[in-house]
Image (cartoon, rainbow, N blue to C red; front, side, top):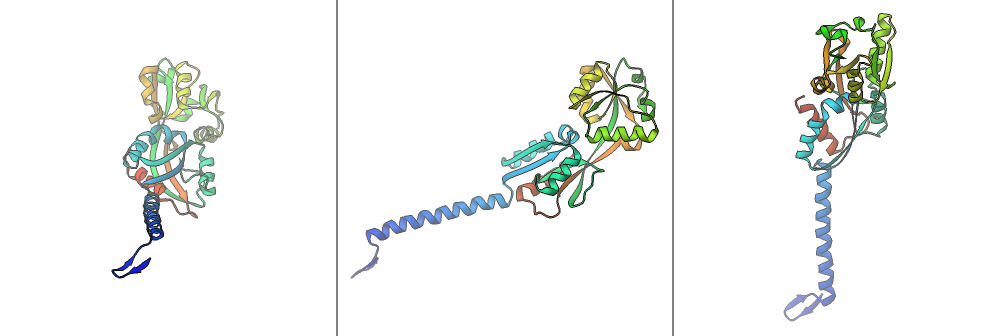
Length: 247
């Protein structure tokens, strides 16, 4: 700056410095606004791990509505086994996990999410297709189509068969509910699936869903976050949305 008889005015260098200062303040304001968007959850990245049942039955519509409200948030979804989901959330590999009740929840904050109903699936030409509900023990004389080893669903029915005292006649193992449905439609065996994961396949594939009356056939899905790490704004908004969205 320089003094004149009329007061103080900027030198040419001062004008240059002022322009740079204004740009710095504008940049800081933009930076602050962008950080605020991340902290309040309107922008961000969430790592969500879920088991197959949640992924097939509940998450598609819930994520669609969440991303409608928060289009600048990116949700990275992975299908995993329940035990792996728990470990991932505890270790910070996943921000949010959805899994079947029964896995250890030490080190987690847990909320109830959904209930799914397991059914016996068979072709309409199978002898069991004549009944509408059944006890699991009455199914154990037939061959089964199941998921690959390690899945919570396979563990559930294997444990149930063991408790009854009969071996599970596992004839075919596949990686997805869709593949199970196709194999069952081809009369390679019967299977136990969540109703929500197979009801769209019933008519197209000529399948029958039979209600399982055993108490374990109603399963609770849980949402978990780490008890030792604070949730990001985006992850907190996602959990809130999942819990509040009707199933």
